[in-house]
Image (cartoon, rainbow, N blue to C red; front, top):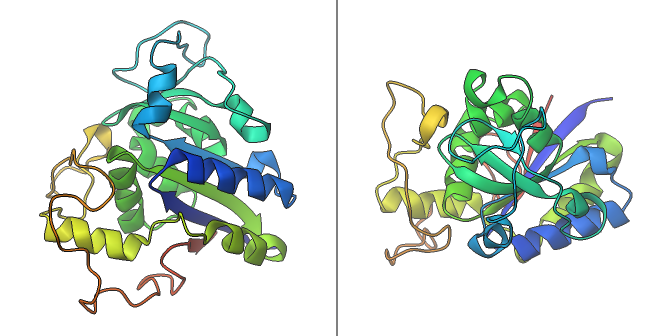
Length: 234
């Protein structure tokens, strides 16, 4: 049976965590769900906690990919939240299969960090750069692996009021000067243009939001899926 990767970005960690809880309640296995968050409020809870690499040695968060001590962020998957250091992003909060991929042998440098992990899961590279940019700006990404039998359920749960319309958000960022490439650390591909942004994931100082410009059609131009929830086939 075909495996799909489903992605949804949230401005707030709390909205992403609620989506994870609803996925679990619907019977989606913990092993098929992942959350990666750079929400300042959530990250601040764990900044002072000791962190360890995957061999058990205590480490900082400046370079390399390392999963911190299990910190307890709720029930189910969220109980396994830990600090993760990703090149170009620094310390973030993460749990699930995508986090495990990032702390695998050589993942931080050899596969291009977060972008490499996402593209390895079937996410289009252009979208992977957008998700990395969104996380860098303080967002939270939920990624689910599912087969066709649960695809509609997963998509329906993730396509909620708190979910970011990435097509609209990308338009906003481009109007502010973003070039479509995340330029942080090893997630930056040599020879491309772009710069790491430091503004919030939400609408920034620019008053242009992409609404009413014709740029947002409600469907992703690559996959044809709803833009708030993107689905990729493996």
